[in-house]
Amino acid sequence: MALHATSLLPSAFSIHKEGKLNASLKETGLFGVSFSDNLKADLNSPVIRSKREFNQRKLPVGAIRAQTAVTTPAINRATPEGKKTLRKGSVVITGASSGLGLATAKALAETGKWHVIMACRDFLKAERAAKSAGIAKENYTIMHLDLASLDSVRQFVDNFRRSGRPLDVLVCNAAVYQPTAKEPTFSAEGFEISVGTNHLGHYLLSRLLLDDLKQSDYPSKRLIIVGSITGNTNTLAGNVPPKANLGDLRGLAGGLNGLNSSSMIDGGDFDGAKAYKDSKVCNMLTMQEFHRRYHEETGITFASLYPGCIATTGLFREHIPLFRLLFPPFQKFITKGFVSEEDSGKRLAQVVSDPSLTKSGVYWSWNKDLASFENQLSQEASDVEKARKVWEMSEKLVGLA
Ligand code: LMG
Ligand code: NDP
Ligand code: PMR
Image 1: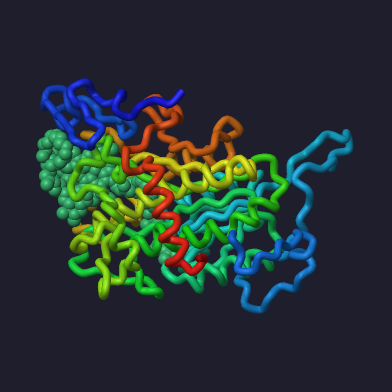
Image 2 (image 1 turned 135 degrees about the vertical axis):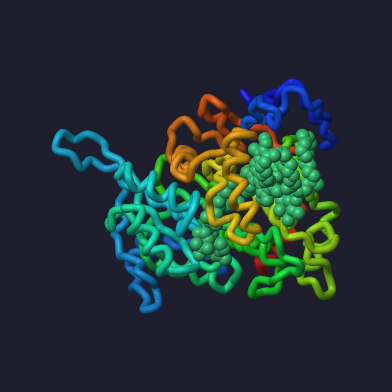
């Protein structure tokens, strides 16, 4: 049963549908009572290639440590007793060189049931991170992916296919956050960098890899996109200014290039924190649109999540030092929304592999007893019409339509 975020808020808070927030200061987290964070392919070519064809192809010179692997059926009778065994799952995690992505890679690799493809923009950083996290060599492969370049996304997809590995789960985790930027910066194709990376890069990646997911014979295939509480205006955290708001999408329609269109989705003046929150709304809308378009036909589980406030990650690297100093204790002791990198990794790993989390179209969160629950998205983040428009506009921007 879906729990409503608002129903978990302290009674002193009520958040109305239109995003207005009423707060009486007695019994609020800031004054001693916890606000738990949870309170609250299309392919270039339409030809569908069989896995056998993938495996027969030669490894390209340019593939970065893409190891050869012969794809075996998901379930085989390998044991002498003839018991059915499941082959190792194969999961791609973007931005696995730090924070949540790295912690998730570690949690999955440690089970011995997953091979993690760490899709990262900085190969050496990723290698060092995997080593220092103690991930066993045989459980991961690093492949280059820069989400701020659509060419790089396409190259990654080619390299991945040439590696011969199946794709059982795709996790769109990477993100950038520019809270202090005064002026926008842009991706290779000229999209404002936060929406360009967090949304458009992942949008192209997941559209292209959908075919690979379809071809997997793994029993539970999933596409997971990391969302956040701060993009949801039905929560306290989502009401800290600047608030997410995609408006009428005029900036997105114009290409977010800051030249003949605004760099912001809603057409407004650049605001880095808002651009990040808007990108998270796009992530959550995309997950639902995937669900509506493809779940029934493919059986793939499409999900997003809010892993908790992982206040110590690299996401806040561009914030002022005072913020970085105060934010973790603020989240730990005041909002009580704090979660360690390790625990957040276990949460995302659950969404990847837990047999009880196979429901599609869900935005997962965790309550104060650390149990997962189906959370409710804000009105904007669950707007069906907006989801369709974001999908169609994004499709044009990334060259799929
Ligand atoms: C913007 O500022 C930045 O400008 C932008 O760059 C980006 O970072 C963006 O969301 C990201 O934030 C937001 C800024 C403006 O909020 C603050 O950071 C103000 C901090 C004020 C601290 C007062 C809290 C007191 C608690 C003491 C704890 C000590 C530890 C401090 C750690 C700080 C780390 C965050 O926000 C405003 O305009 C005013 C702030 C109002 C908050 C709005 C929340 C809406 C819900 C209202 C509920 C009211 C609950 C009590 C309010 C009292 C606190 C103001
Ligand atoms: P980190 O900064 O630690 O991790 C982000 C990762 O994304 C890094 O590995 C980074 O690579 C990678 N990345 C950034 N840009 C690109 C790019 N162009 N191409 C490929 N990879 C890229 O932050 P978190 O672990 O906190 O963030 C992970 C996810 O969790 C994000 O989606 C974020 O929105 C979400 N989230 C985080 C919360 C938090 O409290 N921290 C709360 C809610 C959601 P590199 O190492 O090279 O910089
Ligand atoms: Mg927020 C229940 C309270 C709660 C939670 C769970 C978060 C999560 N935050 C909460 C409350 C508040 N925050 C309050 C009351 C304030 C005003 C003092 C506040 C401020 C604040 C700032 C300035 N919070 C922030 C920032 C950031 O720069 C972070 C951000 O918005 O990044 C986009 C952030 C966050 N608070 C969170 C979470 C999870 C973030 C981080 C990032 C994200 O959504 O990925």
